[in-house]
Length: 231
Image 1 (cartoon, rainbow, N blue to C red):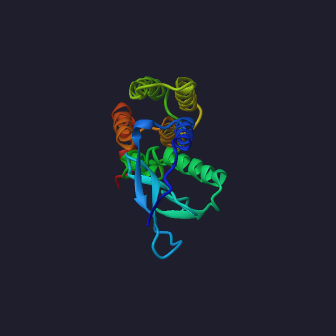
Image 2: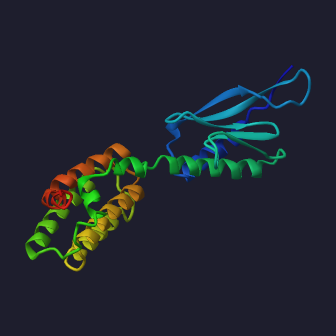
Image 3: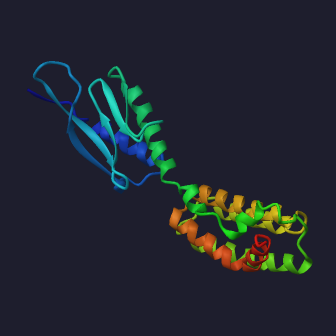
């Protein structure tokens, strides 16, 4: 016998509210039904509600005694018993929605990409950590303004405080260029950019494009750094 234990409309409406609370787009989700793999008798088959996240086809399945979800906290797919308590289901659902938000952020390793001439030079023992010249500081300030403008133009819809965050970050880089050595500044710049990519939630492709743009804008430093890699 087939037993329908799919969620009623009121419960689905509560899930709708939770999706909104976690800042995810409702259009990215789809309700489907699936058969239970839980065994509660010899003949019964249970129809369950399953919420599917379309961008990655991850899911959250509301079972009779357990919930199954992907991504899990550690593994790709995990399940937990809920003892038929909605409060437990809701807690697990909220944790799942939070993981979807986290996984939607850019892959920081991918955004950094392969080692560049600049980052390789920064960790090279042959690169002296001497201060920038006054002329170099002026060029850096001009380049940072170009990079900041490019970064701002890549964001379709600003959230509160993002513009200030970006400007404060670039202001810090400008000030640092006149007080720390070039090796320290290069490392500071790369760290600042990756931090901004993560906070702003940029895609890996967009982040990589901005890094390429920054490389061109700071080309004089890249060339200078490359000289320290030659024997």
